[in-house]
Length: 242
Image (cartoon, rainbow, N blue to C red; front, side):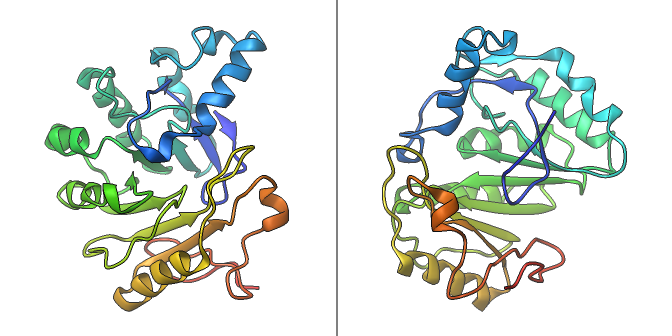
């Protein structure tokens, strides 16, 4: 468990670590950079760098949290990576099922495997399932997500590296948008963001603008048209308007 600076969550929980690149959005993976840094620091959990690793001991951690938490699951991995066995994915879901006081946000780029396995999993209402959609080449991930049993379904359009016009947002509850950040970044165009905002507004989908990104994401900020969009699913209201 770790407190998170990610704007749309409170903390992270990583029962698995490591991943492999699958699409253009992975090119400058922040998790890979962080894993190598932690490996160099001698952190045992990352002794093999960014190779896939399963951490059985981490499964019990959510039972120790007090109150209710908003939790990003596997910020340093992809739970639906083909090297992660179904049996372990089920264990992760069982922990989430048994902790209804917390809200768990699961995000994958392996939407095809998610779709393949979704009937094997118990989708309690505290599990929000999302897919990454960085450009038009991967919009098919939305269709896979839509067919799952998740009660809350969301898209992470980050890093947004191309326009996403005319998406089918039927049965999608939340869309997060963000530009790429880091030493090497691909620029995001403002009209791409506005277009997604308009699509969400037309169908009543919560819209969250995370960042413009760039080499100094704090300096570039989160303002879109003079305001900050912090909409969340279910409540559907903006809690951070400037």
